[in-house]
Each structure stands twice: as structure tokens, then as C-alpha cells.
Length: 616
Image 1 (cartoon, rainbow, N blue to C red):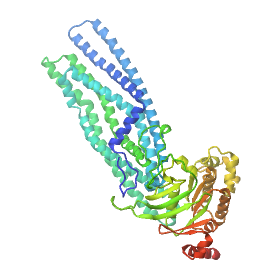
Image 2: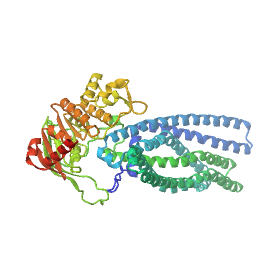
Image 3: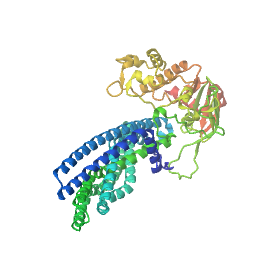
Image 4: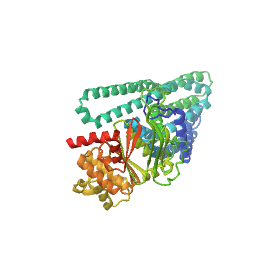
């Protein structure tokens, strides 16, 4: 499976071998249905062979002066075989559709499971556009193929093999003539060698366009405020042009394939009739054989048309499936099994000297950071370039129930440290443990009960206020939901027209940034972890509301560990200890009073911030 290079942050795409193995796993998961579909198709194709052969017998019988009773005896047999073929083909397609729908359900469930298992850092680096395109356009392409194209192509392939074999059995010379004129087969071979790369390029261009449009729409106000409209329009036009070029390439391939499909309908039949006429004039074959061979090849046009016409969809679906299956590498899973039976993938193990297994349970709530180093992938560096650390040997211990404030200038590594503490990322060196177990190696369900990270970023899900809160605690009653809202100062929720049943989003109440952030904080209260990491979690609130919310949270989180990453130093003033980050290093650690008295970096920050507060 191919992985992104150092200069490419896109999600990986499965290579052909991996895609084939994934497809075979899907077939094995529903092997009985696949075998039934194969058997019914074979029987339907065999029944379809009887008609032309019997018709040829009738022609030869009439030519030789046979009686009417022979024709009367063979004609009903043709009808019976036609009815049998119709019924068998119908049930074969029904079996194929059922197989396709069940397999599609597995693909969709697996995709959702893998998407939810993706490390947050991976999604951030790749962008939501690629992930969205794979979960919508690509999964839809796979769905349509499994539901419609795959069963039809399979039926057509079985029919084509049986019909060609029948022509060869009738007369090898006529069979060779018919096969030689199947120009569509050569066109398909030419098409298949080029189509996969073309469709993968088209999918990548579509993902890039979706990412650009989503980012532009999301930041529309910023674009307008900074006068970036022309620049963003130019970038979108460039992305659209890339999509046009890749789409034109696939259209060109189809412009070669489809005329070959049309020619394949006529040339084999014409060739067999001409060759059969020549052989018949020499007495080498009977008229009935020529008629039967021509009818077989005439029947061949329908399955060949299906195969050749669906070849485009199959190639597009193969490229789409490679992109969908590629998500397994980023999520750490490769097995194509239903989500309900998938073992929850363990995150990438921490590179600590002796990491504990993911199944281990923390002995207590103590968090220890030991000689931690971390580096983000650097865009533009070569694949062999050494990563550049943004954290340099950080050592820190957080006691259960402690309130720790992490402060420092922008770019000092505060948020990176918070992500490591929450298990979002794993350190490149050293270890981050909770109760002696590496945080990044914990099962996600265990991790959420241990540590929760709350950042400036927030999301309001479509649904009611109650739905948005119960994401964190599905069994919570209305009293608990109202208490959580009150704990974070979300008094506005009580004034909504339908209370907790008020719909949020389009067509309902649209929360502003502060309200959305309070909803996120209320979820934290309901989740009830022993450690909460607040990374500028109140940044969107005005100072008065932010201080009120932080004090309310402090009261609710009594007895729990709170790690607050903030620029507002009143948080540090109220904390048990303050950790000062500078240049990726922990430079100071102590209480507010101790650090102010020491006259170091924190004292300078406090004087600067306190002076601004006084001026305000």
C-alpha cells in the first residue's frame, strides 16, 4: 500500500494487490451467496445455449426433408429452455443484488469505523476534503458497482464464456473467426492498462477541490475581511481546471472504448456468416452449424455490451475502492470485516522504551511525562530528512486532583504538549503515561474515561440540544443535562423556545461561537473524566463570561485533574502549579507566587498581562 510522501499529506491509497486482497476478503465473508450466484449464472448460461443449437437442428432437419413432427418436437424444447434461462437469470441477479447489498453494508460500516479510528493529527494534516470525498463520492461509486454493475458483469461474463465455448465446439474454424473479430477485447485491454491511473488522478483532483471549497466556505468571513476573494477564486479556478483535465482524460479513454463496443456487436456475426458461407459452399459445414454459430455470436453481443459498457464503471469503482481501502493504513486496520465485528484498532504504539500493552489498565490517575520529544512532519523536506523537534526533552508529573496551568508565548509547544497528554499524538521519544500505561496505547474507550481534551475548535451536531449533549453521556437524564449546562454558565439554553428539544443548526437555533463552546464544555462535564485538558477552551468567550465559566468548571471538577493551556493568566493565578513553556522546553514549574517571586519568564508575562488588564 502506498503511503504519502513527506511532501504529501493526503490520505494513502491502497495499491492494486492490497485492493484485490480486500475484495477477496469481502467475497469470502459471504461465500455462500457468491457460490449461489455463480451456480445460478452457470445454469442460466447453459440453458441459453440450447436454443441456438436446437434451431440449427431444425434448419438441418428441414433442409434434409425431415417431417413436421421433428420441428414440433424441438420447438417446445426451445421454449422450455428460454423460460428456464429467464427464471435462472432472474434468481441469479437477485442473488447477486443481495450479495452486493450485504457487501456494501460491510464496506460502509468499515469505512465509518476506520474514519472514527483515524488519529486527529492525521485528519488535520490530510484535510477534511479528502476524507469527505472518500466517504461520499467514492463509497457511492463502490455502492453502485456492488449493487448494479458487479452482478450484471458477472452474469454477462459467464454467458460470454459459455457462448464462445459453444461456437468453438460447433466448429473451431468459425470459433476462431468470431474470436478474431472481437475488437472490443483488444480495446478493453488497452483501456484497462490506462484507466486505473486516470481514475485515481480524477479522484485526487476531486478531493483537492472539495477540500479547497470547504475551507473557503468555512472561512468566508475571514476571506472577505482580509480581501482574499480574488486569491481564493484563482485557487478554486486552478483546482477546477485540474478536475477538468483529469475528467477529459477519462472521457478520452471512453471515446476509444465505446466505439469498439459498437463494432463488437456486428463484426463477429458478419465474419462468421461470410466464413460459414464459404465453408458451406465447399461442403465443410452444414447450414445448421452456420446458423447456430451466428446466433450464438449474435447472443454474445448483449453480454459483451454489458461487460464493455460497465468496464468504465468498474475501473472508476476500483479506483474508488482503492481510496476507500487506503483509509485502513491511516486508521491502522486492513481487514475488510463488518464494523460490528471489527476489533477496535489500537493507536500507534508510543516509542517509549518499554510501552505497556493497549489492554493494560492504569494503576492510578497520575500523569508522567518523561524526556518527551516530538516533531511534526515538515512539508517540503525530503523523505530522508530528519524530523525537527518542537518539544525537547520535557519532564513533567501531574498529580491526581491537581490544577496545572501551562503558559508561554505562541509557538512554545503548549498545545503540542496538550495533545500528547490527551493521547491524540504519540511522542517521538520518551513517554507519556497515565497510571504507568502509555496514554497513546490506551484503547479509545478507556482513554476517554481517563483524559479529555477540549480545544478552541467546537462542533454543533444537527439535532436537538439534548442530542448534542447526550453524545457524551447517552444515558443522561434531563436533570443531568440541565445541570451540565448550568455548570458551564449556558443560561441561554433555558430561554430557548423548546428547551432541550430545540433543534440546532439549519432551520433551528443557530448557536454563536460562545454558545457552541459552552455546549462542548457541557459535554466534558457529562463525560466525567478524571483529567480534563483545556486548550484555550474559553477563547471564544468574552473575558467576563470566560472567567465565570472557568470558575463554574472549577467547582464542578473538584477532585479531578485539570490542565489548562491558556494565555489569560488569571487561570495560572488560580492554579495549584504553573508550567512555563519556552521554545519547546519546560523552563519553569511552581506556584504562581513562587514564579512571580523568582523574577523569571513567568514573572515577566504576569507583569505584562497584569498591566494590560489594569489599562483595560
